Image (cartoon, rainbow, N blue to C red; front, side, top):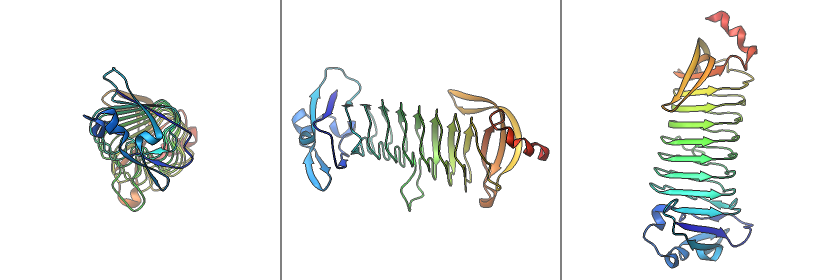
Length: 270
């Protein structure tokens, strides 16, 4: 196990795509210390910015201790292994991740799990905007894997989602699941507006308050519970809406009936 500790509080973004079990594998501490990173517009080595130690424990493969809020692209495209982050981590965590596991014992910046393909990301805090979403101009959203956030997430999460599962134990801001194609998003608490806008497939489950359902969705039924994945189901009852009809969509939006009495007017259409 390799333990990384920042040598200072970073004032500029640190681009550290090299912090990955796939890249560290088979390298000595000296070789790891020479891996290239960027601090702002200055090229550095990992050893310039982090104290690097080796622990006899076999797992996890990499541990980051301390304030890494400016450290970006950790675990990029990783295919195996495990990273544990004890503190805040910066943007682009686990971008294009295909396997393995990342655990954050703190908050994560924006674009965590961007274009994720597989593996597991657990964030025991809050996540920023664009969770599991692609970058602007791209339609390649999350395709597989699982993301679990114990806290809240920002806006535009699960955009262009094409597979996988996102579980949010807290709340989510607006435009959750925008242009969603497939996969499952579960928000246990309240959710912002425009949920599922332009979605054509997939499943969004809202267990808390939802101010409005977009007019391009139609009510289909009321279900007692809904399956999230093989390990979890959410107890309802839930209103089931289909949409986005403006896109000829077949997506399903499940909204808690007890938490949203203002949606009872839809029942006359059943």
